[in-house]
Length: 109
Ligand code: SF4
Image 1: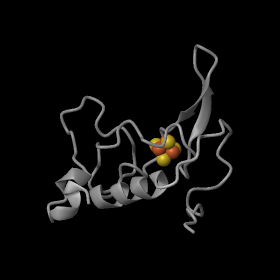
Image 2: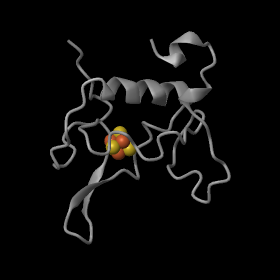
Image 3: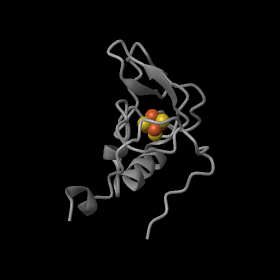
């Protein structure tokens, strides 16, 4: 049992840092803007987000997540999204996104 399982207080699921000079860093968020996953836990894993690719100054291919709202749109919704995709993480292949996030569904056994 985790400490979060013993409370009805769900404030651990998110917060908005309106004092951040980059707030809001992603456009189109309709619910509470969740800053908890500012550094997305899925950055090194396969994910359903609409990322693009770019090559950094060291020649490494990385995700550009500018258009992704999944870890930011609503405290409860983004918390659930991250928990679901971290259940069985798969290391990111480094390839371009090939599955539109609207149709990507994590298949649990
Ligand atoms: S595309 Fe979205 S879900 Fe995927 S790593 Fe980037 S921010 Fe996270």
